[in-house]
Length: 194
Image 1: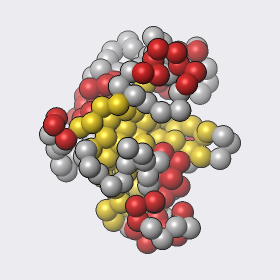
Image 2: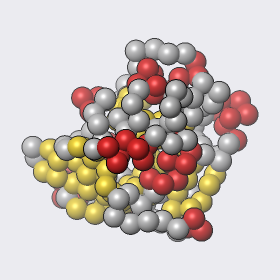
Image 3: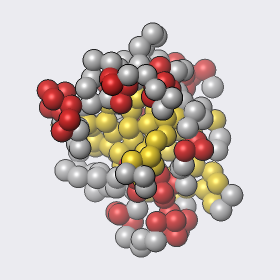
């Protein structure tokens, strides 16, 4: 889908802001789910000490240099998967971490996968949403403009609704840990943390 590639072929921080309000959809054998993206974090290329690729190109991080619009899925703590959208201008590197989603459809499937009843707790964090959506490392490199895992744009979020604050859990990143590259929808109950 050319349009999706073009959307992601922009500066990483700009793409992060524009992803708010978009819908993430996952179609799996045991049921389809969808949710509205309400929180993201931008991770630019080599100059961003918070970015994985700032420490060098590896088998895991080389996808951040790849075609915009791909899924970059990795595991943290050996337990939780995290979904990123590869997004950068030509010749650069970058990805946007999807931190939280507001559940819309397939909530019963999410509850079963997560073993949690409370809707507000289903997708309020990157590991939680991957579990709820059935996202694994098998999705790494998948083009997010196509089924079974894709992003659509149903609702625009106005600039005044977007809160910009420093990213979380990157104390190792020096000055970059203070950059206000975590974005979320103001007053949304489904963000991972205020």
